[in-house]
Length: 281
Image 1: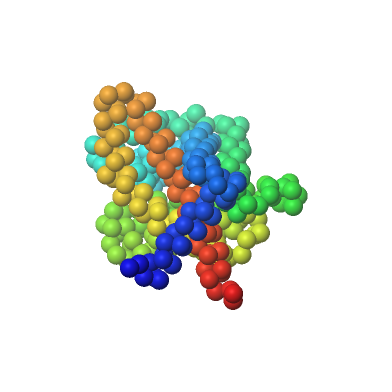
Image 2: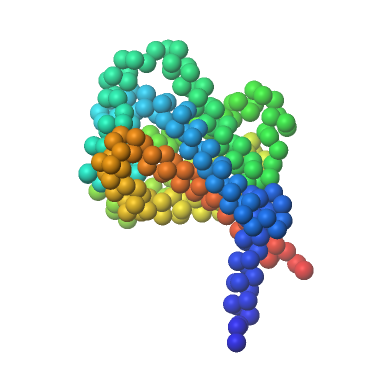
């Protein structure tokens, strides 16, 4: 006989799935709408990230004197790429010195604008998760733009923490203390990231579950990348050349977008479910 605890867990699972479909699908009873909406947002995240954010990060990595390998090294670490996959990733990007030589003041300004465009894409995704209207509808354009610039600076600062501190070394990040520090920093970044992107319209307490859920999912994605994406880079590079490696990187960016938005959505649903269970009646 099914216990009351089992029934409660099953009921909770059904409510979570129903809330997911309602928030992301836009209407009740739409079984596929939630998944399709989340996947569309994730693909938009990947496309905008590759077109707007990656060029900016290439220049930033090239300007960093402590990182002679440039952005390719950053990406290899993010993908948990194996020794065999790292040369294939390096072939996708120009050497750091060449990237710096070809960068002009105009192109740097354009890259900054592209980075803000990516911030706006993430902001729209978070607003969809929390079912909020566009920030520009409630605030001035200057305030919205300032928030997007602040979010972009926060992202760059987060990346620099992992590339210019002891956390960059594999022996440090692999230790229990290093792993704990990386997880705490990531939770704090995602917590503040949501707050800034949403223009302060959602409380800190409500945003914490999403930051924790996204961090856990990113850790899982890192393990998945080592087992799946890293071998795929080598196999696709042999079969299709550099374009094969690009397709794997793009697929990884889609997965990152899915984790970012899906984690925030899971956090919102769990927070609202906890509030519902605590409320009387």
